[in-house]
Image 1: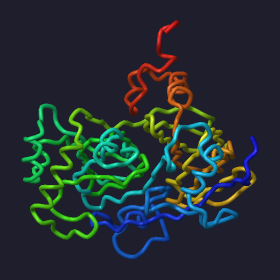
Image 2: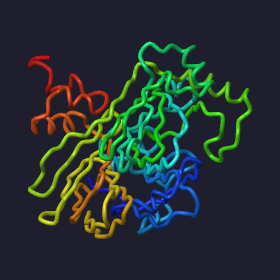
Image 3: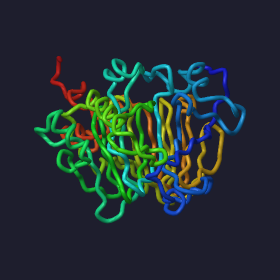
Image 4: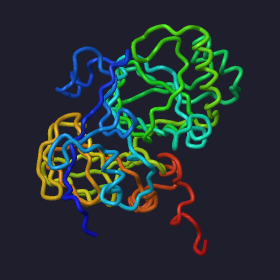
Length: 368
């Protein structure tokens, strides 16, 4: 089907968040060169969050917002993948030089019921770097009820009720909406999530500037957090599952669920990385600068920078050596389960990548 726009890889504006937990890791450890002075906590690589939406910065579509492109050309951007009124993916580089606040994001049903939002925020964290001994708080221990959790949060005794997990570079965790969590200090993460900025946190200070909160405001925040908390998720970090592509090209599926999938692809110099796709790809560079060719367009992608590849382009070529991330809305059977099963991975390890990977069509007995 012809599209009224001549599509090309899109460079987007990237909102920067200078929250108090940030540092200079995006510059010092990833080589990002366009950041303001002072601590930088987050760069929003692809965002259609209300008030923080990206715009195209180069080419024929310069100045057009991601929201406008999503509304006018959903098929060209996303193919046949489901989406709501916004571009469905939010991706970030996050510098947890300090510890992030203990917080959670509502799931879909709770977001609609309590926040008046069309969706919640499930997220995945891929650890790019972590100091020795780094940890994350992810989920609540079995048997902790709402009242015990409330008392511990008021006392900031997080380890009494939360699961503290070791963090290593190269690992990934899928965090369902409603899961209480935090990571840092000393952790650098690439995050993919549903497009949303709703959250509730338990800290006695503001994330933006560290200013103290009045006690009544903090207690009200914790009350809202408890109303949105889900006790059952207990995510675990995973190393990802690899799929050989070529003698010098490897694909690793890091996490996957109904809202997003995240993959890390590496290539040496023997053969280029070539990926075909049927939906928008968020291509972020975790390594040295690379050359990208896509839809007749060729350009450089610097360290810790991102391109959005519309579905209409269909294929991308990345000249190695390369170490890049691809985020997208998956067809879980076609994009995830089937190729992983063909590569020899069993149902249990595939299901551990996220949600929605159990009982897919090719796992069911014939006739069902």
